[in-house]
Image (tube, rainbow, N blue to C red; front, side, top):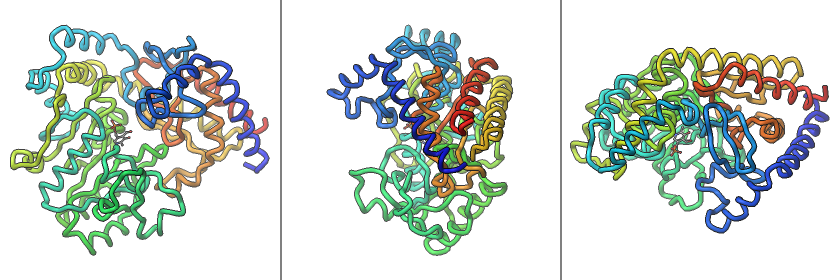
Length: 452
Ligand SMILES: Cc1ncc(COP(=O)(O)O)c(C=O)c1O
């Protein structure tokens, strides 16, 4: 696309943001009020957005309503947690039943055991522990990997997010001038408040690259406990593993006595019935799940090989007041056993490929440099012609197009994530006509931005 069209994209973004502000006065007022009690007016920095967040009031099925009374089709879906859709009757009933019988004991219940069994069977896992968020799950898995190997160092992938605990808060979205060379990426902190010394224990390697990891392991393999990665990167749009990459990682790590951890916080219940493990056919030593496994309640788990998880029995600390809470377990059991069945994934695959192929067609017809990715309930448009292989490719995407597409979609009744790193999640309550509504506005967007 020529430079003229790019200017068009940023002008379009300004016009659309102005329309958004005019249409959402109650969100704006709530934002101004919220600034007095919440930094950035939100409960989590990821909820902040330009020009301010849209404050929601309720959700039902594939729809959400904001405080201005505007109705949207929801493709944000709680950062991918709501694949059951909003207020799903089966999940709501399970939560209501659990609430009437006591929401918390900090003692194990039958539901805790049943939920653990369901997760183990579904995700090829021998034994697991519960947590309350993806952050806690990855934190727990890394602790256990360190305990099991007796080693302190960890490896992560450049451009990956695994939650906000210190060891993984490196090179999450590093600026190009801070990244270092491709063969030896720097460990760049993502936040203030992280002690410099933590960087010494966190090494960073590129996704889809076994050479850099192999060299690192040859140099310092006896210090490395584990590598943690998203088997399919989902915080830079969607970036899939090359054939053989995941197995290659596992083999290399095992050769050096280190463990492989899959962060399936996003991919777990969204990319296939059995998550990325099923989709790509590689079973890691440990894996982490959160978001979509608990029907929109705040639960998480991590687990894998029983001999590794036995580190807990041998003295590795893993605990939490709300772990395995019966309300969350009830929601999780209903979600996995009654709603997210194999048939549900067949349905999601059909909707997802309709959405991605429609987007690809609109991009192509309008000569827009981009591609669409379709992966179960998840998918995205990335404004770079070729698929991404790693984070450095993501830096080549045209952000001006995404910046224009966000307010454009919200102004046309589609609720979207505010950042370009993540795009849609479809729920089982979405319909073909919901998908077609998305496609109509996207085709119009592509035609407008390309000057058609
Ligand atoms: C891959 C991945 N891991 C871990 C996390 C952290 O999960 P949580 O926000 O529940 O702490 C996220 C959150 O977006 C994530 O995308």
